[in-house]
Length: 155
Image (cartoon, rainbow, N blue to C red; front, top):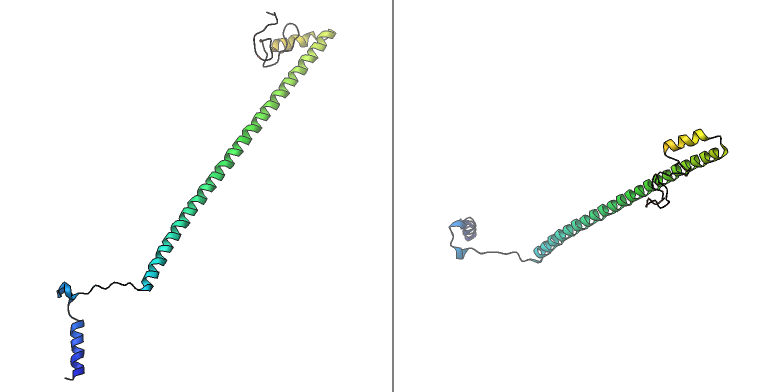
């Protein structure tokens, strides 16, 4: 055997020896402290931080969008309520005006002597009291427009 073959077989023998049977002092712990490994670890850490940052930003965007939708719904609800109140007020005013015109017409007819039947009809409906005074819906029987006590002396 040549010396080259002998060294080759020694290398093979040492490379193939079972390290589980070797004493601990024969084992060498190798750490990879290379610059490339450090850069890779830093890059991975930066990537994880960027992902966290993006998730937080997405949560903030979602919360802001939800708040905007909530404000828009609230604004829409308030506008609908305002319109409903305005409509109810207009309807009330129209009703009062119609009743007022009926009362005035009945009073004119009563004054001319031709509308006694219409006056009686309006009194039965509660739109005129016995003195031919108009009784508006919010005033029926109270004697005052604001619903306070009747100080007119009428019974």
